[in-house]
Length: 98
Image (cartoon, rainbow, N blue to C red; front, side, top):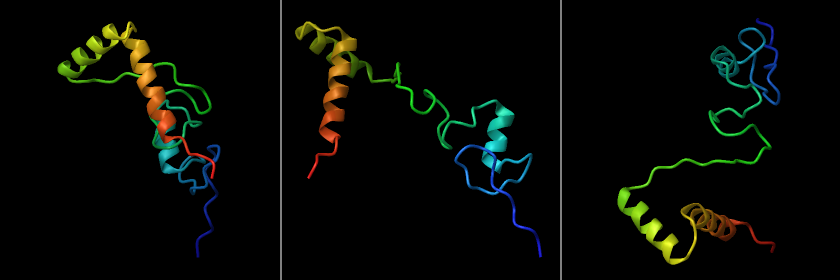
């Protein structure tokens, strides 16, 4: 009969420790130099609890031209237009109190 494995030493992780006190996923992260604080599955973006300051995306050239034309017609910068679109999209998906 084998002894139960101790839990992973990474904050908030309950997986069994396999090597150097860490589970397999956190051990690989440590080897690659990725923060152990970041939730598993997250490989980019700000640390947990910090707001995102920049978003990079790729859009088809036709869509970019349409957005630029809409921004110019609205007297907004492309950044301001995209921010407004994103804020409206997030607001529409925010849960409403019942």
